[in-house]
Image (cartoon, rainbow, N blue to C red; front, side):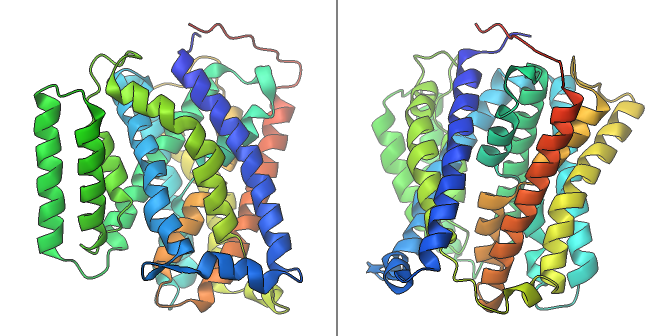
Length: 386
C-alpha cells in the first residue's frame, strides 16, 4: 500500500512527539514532587493578564493543536482515507464505539454522583502517544493499520471536540458567539472567493478565538473551525492549507504538546493518592480507557463488517483491531484536557483523575504494544512512499 509523503511526515512527527511527551511527563512529575515543588508550581500559576500561565496554555496554546487536528481531518475528508465512504466508515464506526462504550462504563460507576461530568474523560484518544506506541513496532506494522489508527484517532478527537462544545460549555453569551460566527462567515466568504493570503485567516482566527473565549464555549473549538475555512484547493503542497499544516507539525509536536504535558502533569502526589484510585471516578476512568476503548472499537467494527457496511483494510486482522483498540485507550492529553473542563467546580477530583488517566494510559499502551508485537512476530513490511 502506498502512502503520501504528508501522511508519512505526520506519522513520524507524532512518533517523536509521543517519546517527548513521555519524557516531559516524567520530568514534570519528578519536579512537582521534589524540593523545588513550590517554585515549579509557581511557574504555571504565574498570572499574565488576569489568567495563569496554565490557563493560557490550555485555552490559548492548545488552540494551535486543534487547528492542526482540524487541518488533518480536512485533508482526510477531501483526499485521504475519509474521502471514500466505504474506507471512512470503519474508523468512524470504530471511533463511535470507542467513545460510547467507555462513557457508558464510566456512567455505570458515576451516575448521580458529583463526578458524573467526567463521562467524557475516557472517551478520548491521544494521537501522539497512540501513534508513538505503534511506531515502536517499526516496519512490521502494515501501513493500512497505521492509517486506520490515525483516522480513528483524528475522528475520536473530533468527537472529543464536539463533546467539549456541547457538554462542557459554561454560561453562553449569544452576543460573543454571534460575533465569532460572523467572523467565521467572513472567512468562509474569503475561502469561496479564493483568497489565498494567509494573513486575513490568521487575523480572523485570532478574533474568532477571542470572542469564542468570551462566549462560554471553549475557545479551542475556534482552532477546528478555522481549519475548515482555510482554503484547501487541490490539496497540493502549494495550497495555503498544506503550507499551514506543514508549518504547524513540528511546533505542535515539539513545543505545544510538550508544554501542555509539563503544565498539566505538575501533580503533587499526596500520601492518600492510592485511596483515591479506588474511588468510582478513578475506576470509571480506568475501566473506560483500558477495557471500554478496545471493546467498543472491536464490537462496533465487527458489527459494521458483519452487516456488510464496510470491510477490514488490507492486511488488517481482527487481533490487530483489538490491539489498536488498546492503544486508543491512551487518553492522556485529551483526557486531561477534558478533566480540567469537567471538574472546574470540583477541583479535588482533578489531581486523582490525572493520576488515574496516566496509570490507565500506561496500562492500555503496554497491553496494546505487547499484544500487537506478539501478533506481528516475523512480519517485516516495507512500504513504498510516493
